[in-house]
Image (tube, one colour):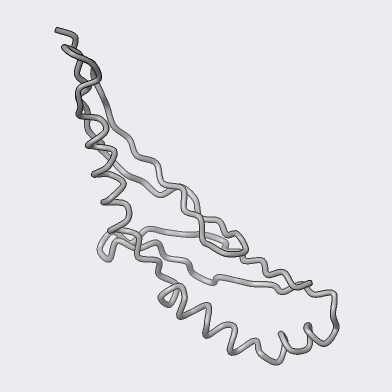
Length: 121
């Protein structure tokens, strides 16, 4: 059985390119087979290049996805809840809080700050 683990010491947000910067992404490969371990060691440069390409050279472009979520939240915050009852609100700020990894994905935690009010007529 092979398992990969990814770690990064810190992330930052590049507002200009609307990307999450992942400097020095590290990986480890665990394997029960010695042959797999040797292959991973010999293939380390290829693995590093593949990770570099997959992350856009340490940049994950997330701006468009965050815009879509923000627009969807905005739509949900501005609607009629029942006859004579409306919800009105807006998302005021979006910030990236954390980046983690799973065996198949990067997981980004973003916080959407906003306000909403209910109007009853």
